[in-house]
Image (cartoon, rainbow, N blue to C red; front, side, top):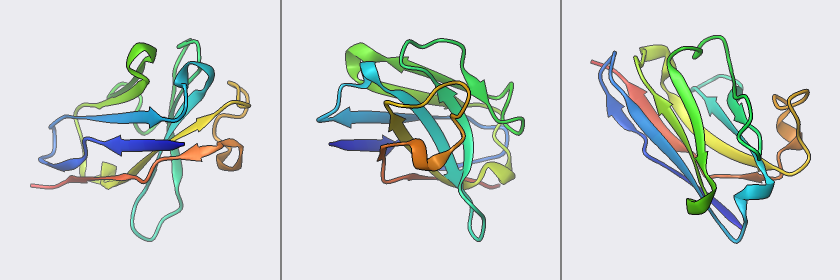
Length: 125
């Protein structure tokens, strides 16, 4: 089982990136997906969540209105579209999958069963 996060890179403030989280050995249809990020010297923080049925997504206040999470179960992939990027968005971004999480506890990291390896996002001029 593997989650592969990709799409990170160096972007100027105000720019956009789209992160992908592709699964192998795992059918994402049955899993809720969370995106987390970790900046140097800081705790890993929750960014966004989408249920297995692609119901209402949830976002951290710091990214609301700028980031959009979506999923394409046919491609076994979840995306995080990031617009209007700011220097404070600089971090390693991780996707995680859970078969036991809900809209009541999606921020709890230990409830996620599988984690991707992370992709670096750097926002700098």
